[in-house]
Amino acid sequence: MSLALVRLDDRLIHGQVVVGWGQPLNIEFIILVDDEVRDSAWEQDLYRMGVPSSIEVVFASVEEARRRIPDWETDPRIGILLAGDIDTMTALVAGGNVPRVNIGGIHHRAGRSERLRYVYLTDEEAAKLRQLASDGIVVTAQDVPTARAVPIGEFL
Amino acid sequence: MSDLLRGVVVSHAQLADALIAAVHSISGVDGALQAVSNEGCDPAALAARIEEAIGTGPAVLFVDLPGGSCLTSAIRFARGRANLAVVTGVNLAMLLDFVFHRDLSLADAAQRAVEAGAKAIRSPAPAT
Image (cartoon, rainbow over all chains, first blue to last red; front, side):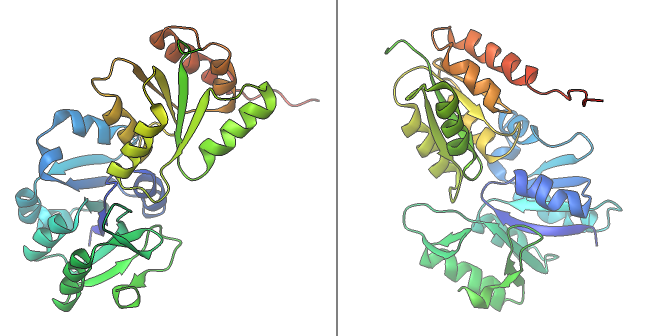
């Protein structure tokens, strides 16, 4: 299996992903799934900054990602797939082929309350994540690899 | 004083606060720099913190890493705003130089900061 991590993280590509996970996993590609970023060369340049040239960055729409996940899963390289919001992740999971979801960071904004130090959710968002888990997806929260993967049942 | 540039240091965790405290203790200059941490922020919340720190005046945004959430928020925020410049890889030497050269144009201050920061990175030969 070559997607080592399917991660929900509102910062998308950032230090925890490139360094925190990227170094120990020795990743060679990152898939960023976001319909808006997919259509913006400027946003793509922004996310490419800070990613070493040895790591390929692929920008995909939700539809493209659903189609291509099986290819990425059989890629001989190790990669990380990122989605920045719960709806994008839910749409990806609905396409099948995503058995586990890592919650890496959903940060504070108005209306959300703290569930973990790096996970803030509205009640509606919490319900969507619980639904993923009841659909049989393994959902855990873990910001960096040295932290414990916290099962969703412990904080929702 | 209102013509002088301000610096906003955008960092992970408490790095910006610590850098600014060090600048103050070395230079005695106060009020030139403002700290912003990305701690606990989603991109919108971080942009709001940056906006609040900048105020109205021209400012240089000093960012810790050349990629990542602090940089993407800073660049997104500075886009289309002529009174903001972004410099990455902030270090103490860069900020110490900046606080004494805040009367420069924005572009010159940013270039000067890049040079001052880079000059500080050396590997002095150990004593034999």
